[in-house]
Structure formats: structure tokens, C-alpha cells
Amino acid sequence: MMNFHSDALIHRSRDWRRREFLRQVAAGTCLLAAAPPLLGNELPYQSTAPRRPYSGPNVILIRFGGGVRRRETIEAGHTYAPFLLHNLVKRGTLFNNMEIASLEGVETSHGQGTLYILTGKYDRYKDVGGKFLGDRFESKAPTVFEYLRKHYDVPDHQTLIINGEDRTNEEFYTFSNHHLFGVHYRSNVLSLYRFKTYLLRRQIEAGVWKGKELESKREELAKLEKVDYRNTESDGQPKMIEDFWGRWKTFYGNTGLVNPRGDRLLTELAIRGIKELRPKLMMVNYNDTDYVHWGNMTHYTRGISIIDEGLRQLVDTVEADPEYRDNTVFVIVPDCGRDSNPLAAVPCQHHFGSRSSREIFSLIFGPGIAKGAVVDKPAEQISIAATVGQLMGFEAEFGEGPVLEEAFA
Image 1 (tube, rainbow, N blue to C red):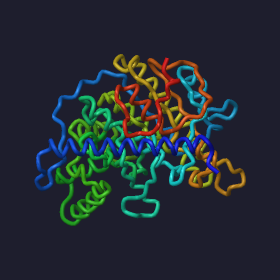
Image 2: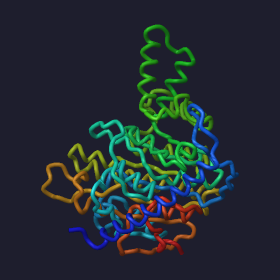
Image 3: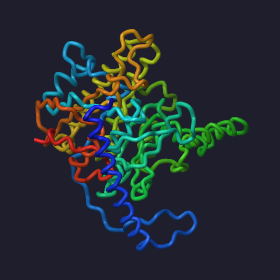
Image 4: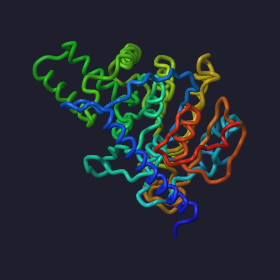
């Protein structure tokens, strides 16, 4: 039987769908009246109204990812994240009773949780190619990156997702299919996959290989480019990011044996991204804890420690930068929880929708955020998008979660 909280969420969702339908009908009517006819492959009509400059605050979203339980993160005596618990919690507002709703089709996994966070909306996601465990999802609701770029004059290289090298299915959560947003307002990505693609393309252009070896390398590049199934970056990323990869190559070389790997790589990419690209909104998709699927509990707990150390490095980077120090808010939230069944052959699973896999938390700290506050009442993961909007001056109008008002001082 569904509890009162979930039932209320369903009613709110139905009310929202009704409002969205009426809004879209009105918007569609206006667009049809105002838009010029489409010719061939032209993109849909866009407003030419100038967008305002954005001055802050910057927001750094941390996906405390790979799925984590409250026990090993925010519970004293059991935590493997001491910097998070003993330092950062004192500096902000902790929502220790955040949940992923127990609704039909709302799964507790990494891609789904990431999109719940980015869009502020629960939805049922299926791989666009119908592949088992493919997890190539496309959101129907706009992401926080799209809202920001539609409202403000922020270039895509200043809206960044920092992604793991083995999560290429998440490379293209950069924009939704929403008819009023989409690719025009996309974010961009820093990841090892993007660097490998950049490097191989540049080596082919430079004539490094000849004959059959060149043919083989072109086939390899085609496979890498095919990962972008939306075919939005067949010629590479924007110049600012291409230049970023050029500096990365100069520093770390070509082999991949020198640069950090796993979530340590994400921390390094994020730090360099802050220093060189100056993002206004950035999401770091940590994921090392997911290696627990190999069956070793220490993979999970060590993953938490690596993320905690990454948090410390990111906070130190922000505090050492005059433009970021007093103008940046951190929003930390897991993609999902994990199962607490002590009899499971492989510990800490998350795919079965158990209660603890839906029990997460969120910590928000920075200028304008209440310090040392702990909010015990239930909150929803989908409230993150609305809260980011409140911080950055836009409304996540197609999301369903309310703003986490308790966080604001």
C-alpha cells in the first residue's frame, strides 16, 4: 500500500501534468503564430531576445555517486566520509531524510537518479536503442543547465558535467528533448572518453599513421564518435574545451598511464575545469562506490573515502580562488541509496528498489545557506533542481519537486 507521502506526490504530479499540458498548448499556439516555416533540417524557432549576464552564485553539484547508504556517509561512528560529516555538515544544511519516491517505474540506479536530480522530475526511462542495461536515456523535461542557459548569457563551456570513463551512456545527459529547450541550451562534458576522441581525431589529422594502420585508426574513431548517438559533436567540442584538452595532453601525455583514473580523475578534471573554463554550473558525477558489484565491500567503502577526499580538494580549490570563494554553493546528493540486506551474496545492491536504496541525503553549503542546520522531515530528490533554480535565479518550471526552503538563511 502506498503511504500518504507518495500518494500526495502522485496528486501533485497529476496537477503538474494538467498545468504543463495547458502551458504547452498555449506555448505551441504562440510558436505557430510567430515562427517562420521550417525548411529542410532547420532547427525549431528560437527567441532572439538578449539574455542577461550571469554573476552568481556559481553552483557545484556533487553526485555522491555510485549509490551510497546513509550509514557509511552521514552516520557518526560508521562514516567513511569524515570531511563530509565533521567539516562540511557544520557549514551548511543537511537534509538527512531525503528519499527517492516509491512510485511505479521510478528506479533506483545511476542514470535515472542523475536525471531526477537534473530535471526535478521522476520519470520512467528506457534505453533509446532498446539495449539491455544500455541506460542511454533521453529526458523529456529540461535540465538545470538548459534553464540556466536559456535565462542567462552563459556559454556551454561554462556549464559542465564531469563524467566517469566507464559511464559513456551518461555522456549525453547534456540536454533534453523538450521543445522549448533542448540542444540550443546544452551543457558540455569533460571526461576521458572526450579526451580519447579528441586525441585520436587530432592524431589522424596530423598524419601520424599511414596505410592499414590509418584505416584501423579511422575505424576506431568512428566507433568512438558513434557513442554520440545524437550526432551533435561529430567535429569535436567547442574551441575552449578543445584547447583544454590540448593543455591536458601537454601535461599528461598520450598514454593514459599518467593521469589519475576513476573518481580521482573526475576530481582532477573538475579542478582544472574550474581554473581554466570558469564554470557557472558544474556537476561532478562520482561513481567509484559502484565497484561493490564485484562483490567486495571494501570497493564500496574505499569509493566513499575517495569521493570524500575529492570533496576536500574541490572545496580547497574554490576557497583559494577569489572569484569563487564567496560566490559558490555546493549541493551534494547521491544518485541512489543501496540495499542493506546482510544476507545478500553481493553486498549493497541498488537495483531492487528496497527501502534503503531509496533513502539518501543532501547537503547544501555556501553563501546564503543556513549553517549547522539539520532538517529531519522528509524531502524528495527531485527538489534539488528547484533549489538550484532558486539559487541561480530561474524557475525549474517543468520539474515537480518544491524548493528546499529550509536551506536558505
